Length: 118
Image 1 (cartoon, rainbow, N blue to C red):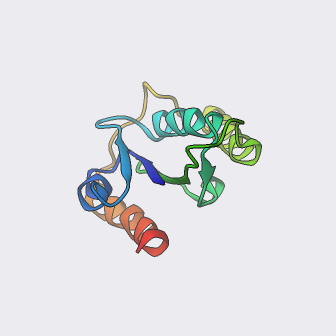
Image 2 (image 1 turned 45 degrees about the vertical axis):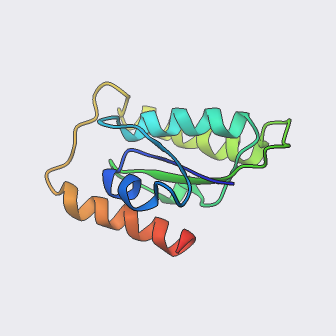
């Protein structure tokens, strides 16, 4: 099963029904990382390297095997690294603000998801 954790309403709108979408309305990129960490801890495997993604809008794609019992260590390591980098840069769940050019950034994030999921 494909699962998307996102704070991007455009991704949520396009992919609901095509994949499981966990839409975190009005939440920061750091909140997306924390939710993604929960998915990886339950065995979800990242389909894209989150260390290459920057910005307010984040959509993290996972392949989830319902039979998986163990956490996906590689995904956890990547997500933990991103959370630490965000903390170093002063980004938290509380202090993130939606950017002025939100439509452009939403489209950029949607484009990445579209490349992977079609």
